[in-house]
Each structure stands twice: as structure tokens, then as C-alpha cells.
Amino acid sequence: MAIDFEAVIGLEVHAQLLTRTKAFCSCSTSFGDPPNTNVCPVCLGLPGALPVLNREAVRMGIRAAHALECAVHARSVFARKNYFYPDLPKGYQISQFDQPLATDGRLRVQAYDQKGKLVIDREVRIQRVHMEEDAGKNVHGFGGMSVVDLNRAGTPLIEIVGEPDLRSSEEAAEYLRQLRTLLMSLRICDGNMEQGSFRCDVNVSVRARGEERLGTRTEIKNVNSFRFVQRAIDYEVARQKAVLASGGQVVQETRGWDDKEGKTVSQRSKEEAHDYRYFPEPDLPPLVLEPAWIEQERGALPELPAAMRDRWMRSWGLTSHAAGVLTSHPGIAAFFERAVERGAEPLKAANFVLSEVLRDAHTDGLDARLPIGPEQLARLLAIVEDGTISGKQAKEVYAAMVGTSQTPDEVVAARGMKQLSDAGAIEQVCARVIAANARQAAAYRSGKTALLGYFVGLVMKETRGSASPKLVNETLARLLGP
Image (cartoon, rainbow, N blue to C red):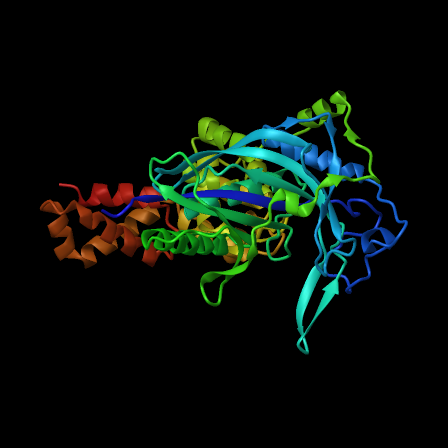
């Protein structure tokens, strides 16, 4: 009998903090500068150079820990994690080990489909949030050689270590999406996965369903897209199941994801903590935080995405799907909220943003470029509501406003788009359409009332969409009635 295996997945997320300078020196964290220009004796690991901790990085770490409902410790300790690799100039990485900044948190991950059905509902325990510095970057392909850019060395990170609570690649990808959105809403990480400022290591094992003991895990290093995470997990789960089903044993190791080949590849045997020879960083004293500062940062948290979703659903009647999409980026959420503050009806604004605005929106890290402003959207919906233009015309007005500062009223005036609401004029058009389609009119009167939509379409075509849909429907129903 075939064994029913289940996947057990835990993610270790590395998030680059949005400080202007590095974790332990004053070098810039700017991305894309010429190689090896944002460096100094500290991040180059030169003899005698001493690190000085970046207070702003600590503040951001505290905020992330609070948002993840962790216990923030008043005392934590930096340690040296020793290993040798070309992009690590000191021969060790300053990190935290047995006394991290924060522990014992959680993140509730929920996702709904477009019909409002709850498809993912998982609480992921957060084992720890600790601070560390990034390594440099190896660049391959220079005439068969590899070179090292140390601009990134020393950039401040937090590592968020989740417990192995995830059970599918879909859950893992959604956890990453919501964690990324959370950190972006705190404005402590730009979430740019292509630039490596949000990436993760994926721990995967399988076990017989119902078994409590964890299986042997592999770690897939530095995966930097949601799609790659899903594909890597699916491949690795299938590989491990095949190994066990054939009577073999999974080897604990570090693997990499090869997207071209669509598979994980072995890199090295998995290191244990003792392999890194952790010991307290002698050049940095323990990090001691004032309890008042810890609480001050808790009070300074903005409204988090989950709370915002709940408020919009409870107070404004948004669907779970709409609320989820609109809170997926802080810039989009702020745009929608400002439009409602300026008078837009929430449900109609949400529908218009989802169907029209987001198609033309662009996000790059924390930057969100929306095609129109919230004031333009609020006014556009207002003139639909008061009957100045129809809903169909609103799409045309929107398209004309994209990338401009024009108001909806200016577009309507310039294009002569004011909705036809004169009852007499509409009745004349309706009467002509009915007379020209006598056979369909007879069918309607014999009971085929669905033909009303046919007549509405003809009237709207003749009036170029300018007639009030409500008045057209009422007039046709009256003229076609028994």
C-alpha cells in the first residue's frame, strides 16, 4: 500500500532594512552604484576596524517584531557566524544566535478566491526575528572568472525564522506575499525581490500523514520570487517522496533552485550550528533596549494590512477578495483609502479600481504609480452617481484622464459627453427602435422579456452611450408593456 506523504515546510526570510547606511558603518546602502564604491575598512573587514551599530536598523527590527506579535527582548547579543566564502570579507558574518532580538510570534495567513471562498487559512508560528548583516555579491561570467562586489556587504537585515507549519507550496507563497506586504506597510523593507532585498531559504521535508516526527529536511537557498518558491517546493516534495517510496533515505543537504532545468540541485551537505563556530561578537556589547523604547515603537505601528482588510470588510462591505487585492501594496491601499475619504462610495470605488485602475498601475518597491489621483476617481464616480455620465462613459473619461491632471468635468465638457437625461428625447429614440424591430417587440410582448436587453443595446448605440441607462430601461419597459 502506497504511503500517504505530507509536505512540511518552513521558511527563513531575509529582509533588507530601509536604512540609508549600513548596519555597522556609515557606508551608503544605495542599490545599483558602481561596484565596490560603497565600502570602507569596516565592511571590507580590514584589521583594526570596529563596528558601530545602526540605531535606525534596531528600531526597524523592533517594529517588525511587534507586527509579528513577537516578544521583543530587552537584551540580545550579536555573534560571529564563521564561514569562508569570497563575498564575506571578514571571514565571518555578524548575526545573532542564541539570544536574538525577538522570539515567539505568529502570522495568520488567509487567502480567498474571487468568489469569496476561504482557500488558505494557516497560522504560522514565528520562532525568532534576529538582526544581521548581509554578505557581498558574487558576479559570475567575466571571461570564465567570478568577481566580487562588496557594496552590499554590511547592509542591515532581519531574518524571520518561521516554524515548519506550512503544508503546501501555495501556502508558502501566500505566507511570503503577506509577510512582504506587512514589512512594506511598516516602510522598513521595500520588498524588491529582484534586487534581493526580500528573499528566503526554504526548508522542506516529507513524512507520512499523521506522523508527528519530522522527516529529514533539505534547505533550498536564496529563492527570490513567489513563482520560484512554489516550483522549487513542488519539485523537492516530489523528489523526496520518490526517494522514500523507493526505499531510499533523504540526505540532509543544501540545494539550489535551477529555474532553467526546473529542478533543485545539490550544493553541499547541510551545516549545523556548531559548524559555524558561533561565539559572541567581541567588538559589540550586548544590545540593551529601554523597555519604554520597545513600547514606544509598538505604539507607533501603523494600521497593519490584516486590520485594514477587516475594517474595510466590516465597515464598507468589501468582499474578502477585493480587500485582499487592495491591501496587497501600501501605495494602492493608500490610494483607495484617500478616494473614499474624498467622497467615493467604497464598493463602487473598489470595483472601479479592481476593473480599471489596477490595469494601469505600476509598483516598484514601495513606490506605487497610479494612473489617476484619488480626487479624480472620487469625482468621476460622483458624476456617474448624479447622472451626468453613464457607467460606460466613465471608462472613457477615465482613459482620457490617465497620466493627466484633468478633472472628469473637464473631460466631459471637452468631449460633449454629458449624459442624455431628457425623458422626451429618450422616449423618441426608444419609439423609433421599437418600430424598426417589430418582430422582436412582438416576441417580447409574448413573454420573451429577456429581449429588453436587446432593445437597450440598440438605444445606447443610437445615442452613442450618452442616454441614461436607468431612464432607457424604464422607458422601454413602459413602451413595450402589454
